[in-house]
View 1: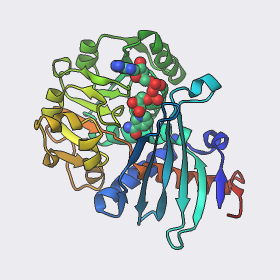
View 2 (view 1 turned 180 degrees about the vertical axis):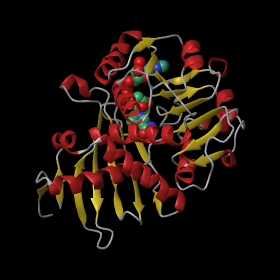
View 3 (view 1 turned 45 degrees about the horizontal axis):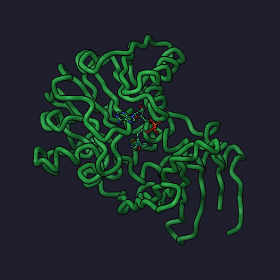
View 4 (view 1 turned 90 degrees about the vertical axis):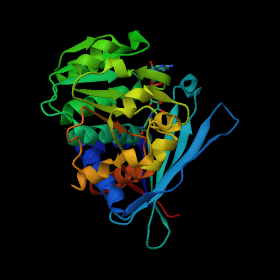
Length: 320
Ligand code: NAD
């Protein structure tokens, strides 16, 4: 099997490769060529950790495997990041493990790629102002990737902890665009595209905040109980997601679904738009992509990185 260490990922994986991998796996999911296995996520009763698996099989890309890992809230005391994961790939023809790949940076890159793919297919025409809600670890990746693939000339941002917004200002200056911290109503009025990526358990962006043609990539809610959007905003938008069942159970749409303000029929897999089987935005004023994060995204970027690592002599081969 091949091992690709976490420390090699930054030098191997490009945002372009992550974007391509995620776009094609969303398309494969919508064609029925790829499916995710049920997610396991458990509080293990040790170190306050949440541990679990996300896995799946892509019959078109021939990726089989899982990402194992989770959230260890006290890791920073040891100088480690709190989210820890490793992707394991298996040979679909024999069942033998074929690779173990550091999953921490890959998770950030595949999550950022998902919102960027949604922006490509769903953003209003001429979108030029990007609004960011959240300023944590993932937010920097989200913003950098959106700026790389979109044509934004200005970024505005809000965070519950305003002192963290300097992270977004740093990314803006690295990418050469102006950044301004704003209140939520200004953000909802001015932004053409909004990315939310927080660990909030209460709605942040309310229906009344948002006006005009807007695309929202809601990326923070990946667990039961988390929430970033007002269900009334969800109820009036055209809804898209990576995986419908997951969006209604652990994603942002869980809340509007629990209130019976939306049902499964109201939500479209983004892959359908990618495949040309759904028009996407159409005449909707607000579109929302609920990026819940699926195992197949992890497998897609991990498979891509293994190939790059082998080509560049950075993969370690071991007998198992
Ligand atoms: P982080 O801890 O680095 O940052 C958390 C962010 O949320 C900060 O901006 C913080 O100010 C804000 N925040 C914290 N508590 C809040 C509250 N009560 N109300 C409003 N905002 C609050 O975390 P991160 O690594 O940037 O991850 C952000 C979120 O994205 C988490 O919920 C994480 O689970 C989720 N995530 C989703 C995916 C996916 O595929 N969808 C992938 C990775 C992470």
